[in-house]
Length: 139
Image (cartoon, rainbow, N blue to C red; front, top):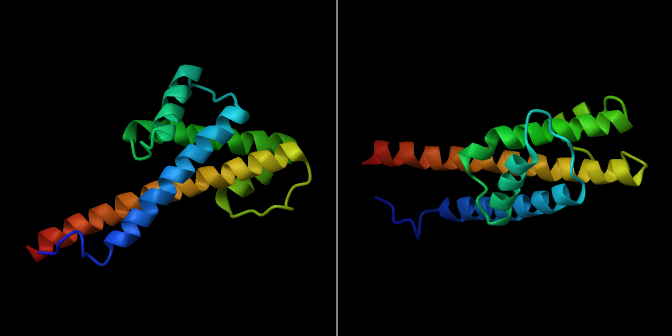
């Protein structure tokens, strides 16, 4: 059985978690600076998710649907400014200079932070599941 302190992948998961913590806090700050309407969700529900992100609770399963809807709202807001760009930006990596208005750039950056957090949440879940399976197979 491997000691968790010396496990070779332990540093990797810790890096993922640290980056997720920072991304969650960044997303919460950016969202509060540019609040968007999220159809089907009350402002209080979004605020609860933002508070959890600010507190570092970035893996809470109850936030999955809220985060997904936030991503949809960001893409929709970008689509309203630049038709089709929000859908593109949600699926692909984008860069500064892809848009030319301050509002669109702010939304694009927020969407990039959102995508990073979503990817990290999945990566962390996958790494932990892989460790659980490996531990079961090796014991």
